[in-house]
Length: 120
Image (tube, rainbow, N blue to C red; front, side, top):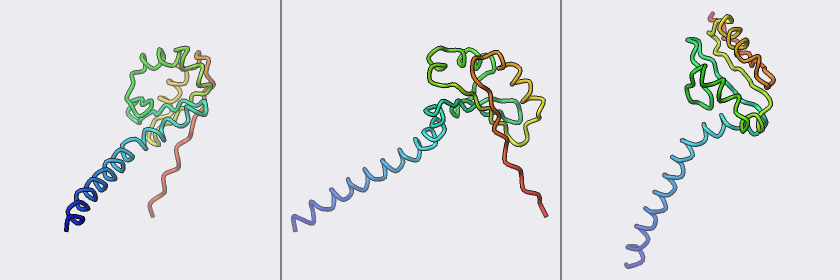
């Protein structure tokens, strides 16, 4: 009788711990996946169709981006800047961003968006 009484709270504690670990994994896994290229020397900069910039899944202003990318601590770990435009981003915005970042000591590359499937 006493064993069943002790087993129930410990199973609830184990279940709560497993749920917490699972929830934490759901929160951290996307961040880790987005930051993985930095370990390979690549900074991925996402350019939205409205001209917004996102670095490591955080919005960033264009003026702040240039200052951040020029930081010596970041340059020592990364050697390439990968620009990832949304499929609906006008190429004029991509070219404008490239011309702003051309003077940085990083190699620039563009990851072309996947083609959108045609309806029909």
